[in-house]
Length: 383
Ligand SMILES: Nc1nc2c(ncn2[C@@H]2O[C@H](COP(=O)(O)OP(=O)(O)OP(=O)(O)O)[C@@H](O)[C@H]2O)c(=O)[nH]1
Image (cartoon, rainbow, N blue to C red):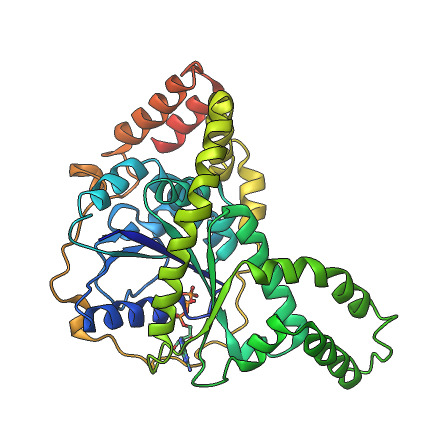
């Protein structure tokens, strides 16, 4: 049995959490209980039993208060703190190789906080270099029927594919509301997509697609998107009804084969190439991590925090349609990633020495003087 990781990524409201809930219960119904990890520090309610939950070790509200951060800054900082323990997390998961086949991971809805942060890369890389890893990019199908929105979403997926260099499955969710056939057609037949763009522009009063901004953008994007589509699998699912989940699992197996055949070798080649530059790379990651913490530049951190939370859902829409099922929690062994006092996770004076020490160690490993301004600032803020 090969343990494989599925990382669920998607815009806020696309249904990642509900998808995770359904995937969990679907696998359980096949007696293939998955190992579940929640990496969303800000989620209020996790409607499935998680084996590892970032919220056990990091208290999001405390991070906001203690670092004086807004919602997005606090998510990034929470992930940064969690990523300092990623080796421990990987070990916990590795110890379960014999028992579980699927490791499924939920990520924050503020997609950019995960995908474009230093810690998001560290976490993804750590899993991908230990287990065959597949990205499930969740799309809200009813919200993507406009060709312009669809193309924007696909471009985002494309940037994630190139950033992570991992096999990807585009999961069109909520097919109980809108079937995903149109998406399949647009992804396989570029003419059909162009027609849809033209019709959309006619409706919106921007005629003559060839000369319009969208027309030329779509034309110039076509080759790149075609290449991108050829690299991925797409499935339509409904996290409400469970439709399409067997197709999704088949797609995961297919992508794991691809991972073994192509991505693994490619990753090994890249890792080998990078060995000489390893020291600089680590330094860059840690610098990025420190930057994300916003400790050196509090003003900037505050500005970043004012960024809007991306969501195209009206508040309360769809709410409460899926209820947590007690079976989804059954027999889940909860594992804690921060041992002892620090597990309580509150970034307070009790566990500050632990964090301080970890940063200190990170700097020492890089050969940086622990007394650098950044280290001193971190220590002061932790206190
Ligand atoms: N009709 C329908 N609604 C769905 C489906 N999956 C999720 N939803 C609804 O979509 C909304 C968003 O779902 P979540 O699972 O909270 O989405 P998320 O991507 O985790 O959102 P964040 O927590 O903001 O990241 C909720 O109101 C769900 O009830 C589905 O398959 N069909």
